[in-house]
Image (cartoon, rainbow, N blue to C red; front, side):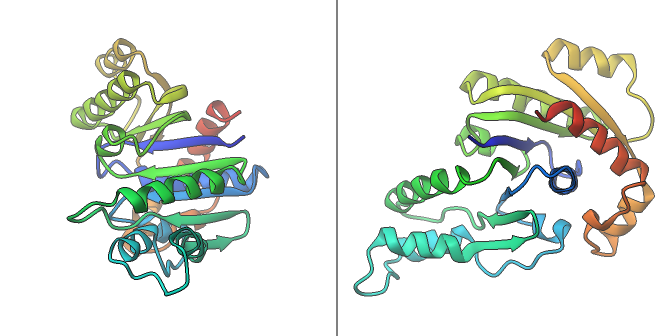
Length: 249
């Protein structure tokens, strides 16, 4: 059975960078193969990983909805084929990009078929990492469900922390986390003060760790270089690895 980690948080907190480092850590520690899922409509996990994406699940769903299924091919076979084509393969992990959100009209049939194939696909991987879109939309639509670890990523801002707390509360209300919710404070400029720690304790979230602001991470992102290529002796990478060691069974 797959061990799933879903990342969520406010936009701009470095959530996708943390997701990329998590995938790097899993591969490094031989927790493979990993299925990485970019569930953000504004997909950029592939850039963090340094992979090119040629197709997305959203494209397949859109084609099926429009009836662009070849003659003589069932919808099931069509979606299975397109799902396989959308997987980008790399050493130790595969990446699946969900792509565009649903447009106008009914996607019920396409989503029903897709859900079945995704369930079968994830069963083939011992570890699944899902990088979700910013905010709480994926939670309210139950895009993220039955996860072993909900990794809430925040920066040092009060708004980022409040967003993480709201996501945690909504996930608890919807009963979608089978394991635990953990908080990662990213891009910090020092240790969290007592007021911040009090908010975290009151919310009932485990603070898994703090990743300090790092100029190397900033420069890689600014220049469009895959952040997974940052050397492992970098302080931010080391801090991230220490967090992952705590939260992953």
